[in-house]
Amino acid sequence: MIEILKTGMYDSIQDFGRMGYQEFGVPMSGVMDRYSATLANSILGNPSHTAVLESTIVGPHLKFNHETAICISGADMNAKLNDLELRTNAVYRVKQGDVLKLGKCNYGCRGYLAVLGGFQTEEQIGSLSMYKGITANYRLVKGDVLPILKTNNYAGNSFSSIKIDKNHFEDYELEVFNGPEFDKLDDNQQQKLFNTAFSISKDSNRMAYQFNEPLENSLQPIITSLVLPGTIQLTPSGQLMVLMRDCQTTGGYPRVLQLTENAINRLSQRVFGSKITFKCKK
Image (cartoon, rainbow, N blue to C red; front, side):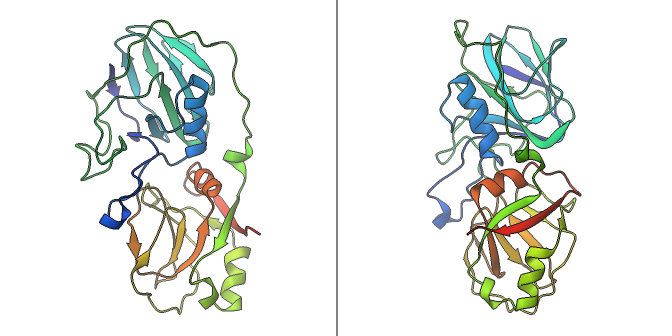
């Protein structure tokens, strides 16, 4: 078991989400940055889709009630195990009574804590991903107790770590495909989409990222149609909205662009106020 001693800004248990239920209006949910979550699980030897603890901006304080092994990937959250500073992308053995403190991000926006065997919280509609209205809680709170597998015979190497590509956290270009309604934009609008540096709004969250810079819009709403994580909608007011993992399954705003999977992962690691540009994937 792991006890939540103190929560961060937004902590939740996430796996790869709920696949195959969108026709019933059930959002996919799941980890915002699949690349980082997969890395943490792979280093431990877990399957890539194993449930992890996702933290945003500032992480929680956790007490371990039995032995296990852990790995932290994604944002560097100044992790400390008791008084030991931890590296990202490395395995550490944890003993009963140890306290893990995840602090404020040095870089990136979301950190991922993987435990050996994964978190064993309750499954709902084929996933452990927390989502309001589907799971009992949509975020972790102080006093929560998270079940994990007990192990004291982990044989992995706890002295090596993996070097990652920092571009995942720093590159401002996001690759996109043209969306279904892209060709309805005039030449000037299309050029502005690819020539503007957009800054991420503080109103961004797991459902959608918004930008501060508007794009002049004269398009008519569309018949309510399929949307996916990574779909970029253009609202009547000219605001661009990038739908993220917790997004709805249909929408009536023009779908002008679609992020690649890699671009969704990278955008999820950008802090509010940072700039991005769109690059069309050939």
